Image (cartoon, rainbow, N blue to C red):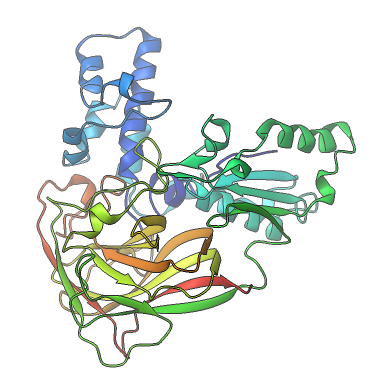
Length: 448
């Protein structure tokens, strides 16, 4: 097989982020598009079709699979209203919303639970800005380790700098604002021909003599071969959040460094789901995806910004990323988001990866528990992975907030089921970074 943009876990790398939020930016419009197509095949028109179409931006303004909702459509609550609108055309969407927690409904479509049953060679294609990056990487890693004798050691991985299926588009050298250069363009069909030629025709294509992992290292913008994923030589290095208590916005006093904190005041902001932080590119589908300047979001006081000193030498980060966050809130449930950013000498802020955690799922995806307001909790935020060189003269930046909309659905902060809630209330957030609460990002540093 040669899976492209594969999903390993249908709950946490298709319908929802690993942290528990609905992938709202693409799930609702995708279901509407599929529903519209179903209705067209049935020959239905009129009021029901108009209802579905009315929530989608005019199609002529967008490319393939790029027809998002109108702003009013994205802002609509409760989300369960979509179930009735799509009950005949996309009934599965109701199943998704009615099963927010992990459990038996998801287990039967969770490939991760069946890696040990896979017994075939597979060539995994993925992209650093793909909405299904996590599934591609975990599929390669899990099947290589747990699969049958015809699978173990016979998995291959290729990850480029594109968005979803970007290698097949004319502009495959770039995604979003950035052009990653001519090396980013690949002959996708040639890779498949050589793979299937070897396994199905017995041809000497040389593909099994090559390294099992081929990754595009952004920043330097070049391909590199590796023997495993994650890389065995990785040095997992914590970089800590610091401030004098005013890290709010790009103009605040937040810093990032390898030195652990001592005595520092916390940072505070108000998360208002009625005015969420906007998504600016990233690992999306349908809405804008890829690399975009993050400064329009960083000017907000509800975005905490922590930046390193200017780097004296190149720093490569290749592998899984994780933010450990100590935080308190006035709510019984809320969200926290984190984003890794490369800051250029001219100030351009390139998003690399982001993630979130829904507080109720901080300990378990299947057994959610609410918070005690005002109490500090430790959160682990999965930022998936990247391969990027922070060049000398650049800075490393971490953004912390509580929303990234419409990529993730908004937490109403009420503690009730998010999907059926129509009341949105603000929450006062506190981010701690001191000796007892050392909030940090763990970077997979590759020695050079």
